[in-house]
Image: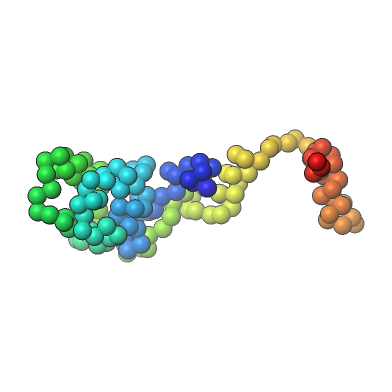
Length: 154
């Protein structure tokens, strides 16, 4: 749904805890896009492309494993931009978790995503529906569709 544009990618991100579940380059945890998309040249020079944040940051210090000793002056400028963006990393004892801007508390729930998609994709209608308990469910649905003038027909 994110790739089709139904859900913006920046609504979901990882909250850094102990850093063991978040992949440094591939997961969205810093900024509005993944680090591999913004720093592709540095990604290609990294010898451990699937490393986690915990692999790269130990005791608040970043450790880099480049495939060659001299990464070049152009890559040095990119590296300086990367280190400014990620800053110092402080890992916590709690596990990594998803964060979502759809809910007020920041926790991801399927319900908040469904509510967002319903508001965005389903047509809104001010028609109220009255459900009759003594009628079968399929009759209630048929009457509701009839009232909305949305019976499936060719």
